[in-house]
Amino acid sequence: MIDDCWWTGQIESQSTLDPEEFPSSLFMCYRVRWDNGEYERMSPWDLEPVDEHRLPREVRSAAWCYHL
Image 1 (cartoon, rainbow, N blue to C red):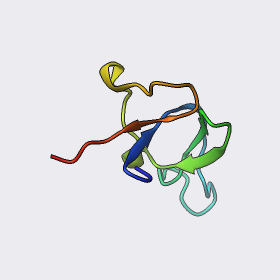
Image 2 (image 1 turned 180 degrees about the horizontal axis):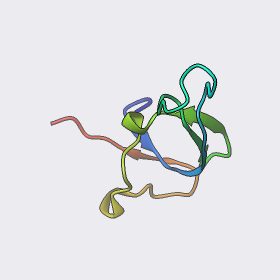
Image 3 (image 1 turned 90 degrees about the vertical axis):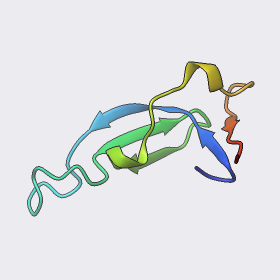
Image 4 (image 1 turned 30 degrees about the vertical axis):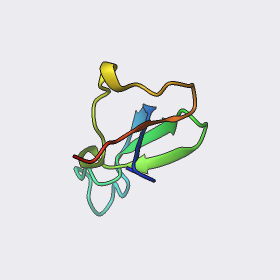
């Protein structure tokens, strides 16, 4: 979550960040392409499945999170 928003993107690939030292580590194993065109390596525990009922209103924007 950044700026109280959830950002959407797609996992493009999975590979071990450090195959020699930690060959089975999931830390930063996913390469994510965000809908704004940027790329970032992420760990599985940093990602959430898409909630179809809370998609962004516009392409390349974020879904707002409301604090209860």
